[in-house]
Image 1 (cartoon, helix red, strand yellow):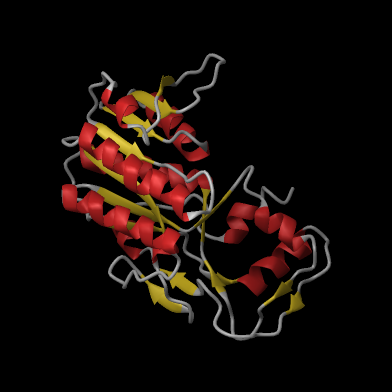
Image 2 (cartoon, rainbow, N blue to C red):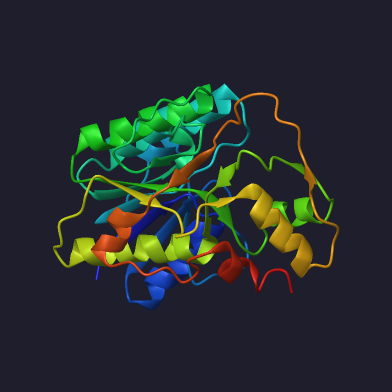
Length: 275
């Protein structure tokens, strides 16, 4: 069993804490505003963007999960957590095993290319560049640290695509605009799985791309969702240039390690949500 610190306790961090706690690990969640109601998770109130707040922590842990999100979509918000916050956390916990949760937004491909862990990461958006730089900093600190790139996360409470499908939206049909996704429960499952492998002494790569088996055209996904909800179908959109983020994510490295997706496709994952 391990002593685990989870920095960032949103839906995924909280779910991860519950799953690891159930396995017998000692789990601490770091949060700026811990819940006031009793919880099975031991929370510590701290702000990673504050050097004083982090340095004041008196905590011995074996493993750190860094699962943060910026307060907004601005460059300053991303710098706050992925530059300042990450630097503070790495300085405070330099010898622990790290799992850094990243995003497939680090890829700049936009013509439907297949991407994997070895593909170029040259995003145009400064916010994505900052995530990419944070990945590099984590691995440079210790090559045994692990970066996990999640694609579009969906699940309970993450219903953007469902709301979109209900509105008969204008969607690119030809050429296909590919989308990639992973169910929230699989995000938790992947992180638990990788920790189990690390504790068992299995060699891990520095990066894993975590996306389901079915990178599907957005037109196909929205059309299927609309049919399931008995809504009007989408409308074909006029193409006026390259579509940002049009890529297909390959998950073979993760699956070769032995991970089996609970929701391998959007149909499997959204079937319960549309009800």
